[in-house]
Image 1: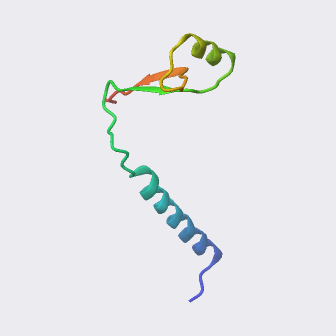
Image 2 (image 1 turned 135 degrees about the vertical axis):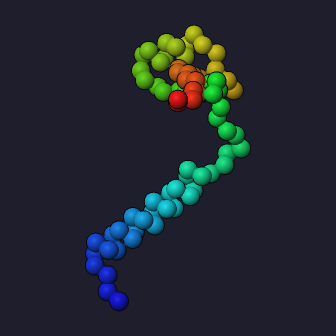
Length: 74
């Protein structure tokens, strides 16, 4: 049975996407985000982020320059 190059390419893409979906998006990390949870991030965006990090306390050696909150979309 011979496959065209397009058919082989589509099969390869389907396999890759299925593998990414299973390993990345369905991985259980032991927690579930809930509305009200705070998310902290260190973005290294230049002088502004450096100034924020200098005046805020980090956690276990990590510096944070941004914070977000989990909200439910209605």
